[in-house]
Image (cartoon, each protein chain N blue to C red):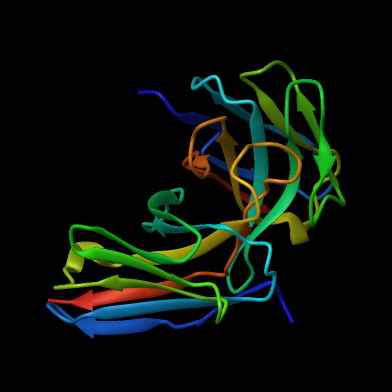
Length: 115
Length: 112
């Protein structure tokens, strides 16, 4: 079992839909959870960051962490064609940068929002 | 603009040729990373440098070497390119107090 599993997709939704993207993980030491967005032919960019369990909201985006289930989600409300991108989850045991703080990434899911 | 700069953006190599991918960051970050991204495989860590003067192997280091030239620059070298090294290569950096990594825009490498 890989440390981080992410639904492979691709996912296609109509404009205005609510999108749910999910990752599961096996390493209970993970404490810091991130979602990256990657547009075609660009580098990934940090979208959301959460620590431990709970929810975090930023505009139309909500990141949710359930450590008891080892499950994280990213919700996109009122999805727009501009949200079409690949979304990668990432996580790490420690925040401080160093040898032990390497991020473990999911493989990413490609989302297409149809006008 | 502040961030991570990668050069070149595109490169075509013949099998057996060598090349160096350059990466520089201007955010005073301590840690730097090299990833490759392939369809269906996600991001795979090749090498990383936790701080200036140190480098360590990642998940897929074979066929690559790295140099942390100074705090700003981290280069990736392919000594004898193989078609299996056709990929998109990303450099990233991270610093204390900063959440997550900042990625460059990538180098698209084709080995024929």
